[in-house]
Length: 253
Ligand SMILES: [Mn+2]
Image (cartoon, rainbow, N blue to C red; front, side, top):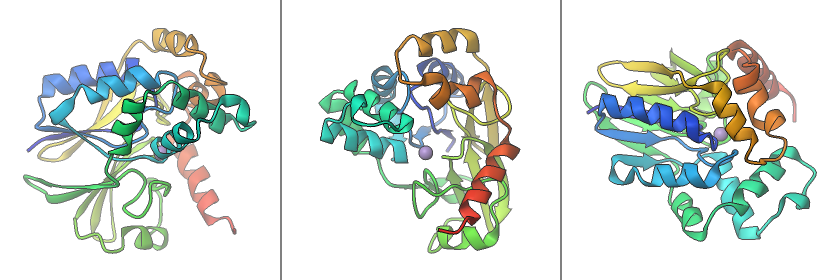
């Protein structure tokens, strides 16, 4: 069994289309979509494109998927908040239909799949414990231990921190699929994972300038600040991500 893992698409349809073209050529047995699909500039079209994958895909809930569902149910509008992240979520939620919202509400908290050559693999968004946990390439054993408690699978696939890694810790292999639509990878492209005989961290190039123009044209609030600056315009390095995430995790309170 070969599995393509697509994480953190963030409403970037041009990136998703480019990745799906490569995924199609690889013809995997299954696509795992790892959450955070629609928080971003093209929430409706991105959701529809994923929904059309039908039986060829399984879906995991991300923290911003939960936020969109909550915003939808509250009928929140962008003028309800001053926070740029919330404003983006409310804007995106307003562009979802009831059936798109219900599709997202059906995403699983985590998935366990048997993959030839691995045995059982645990797929989650942030960590097995929470879709808000940040695992980076440098997260230490003390922080990982409670996140991985009770997980029997020897391979854990995660996302959420938007940078790829493939590392060993606490007797497990931890793989981050990276981000399709909003990568913090030091380079502007789309990043995903193909699990076959070994995990292969994949990069797909697409027309970034055209995508930026199209994403800006949607009217997503503060799109440069919230989505584009650190991912596609001036891509921050994975080192910056792990320094930031580990420092925040270590901060008291
Ligand atoms: Mn996330």
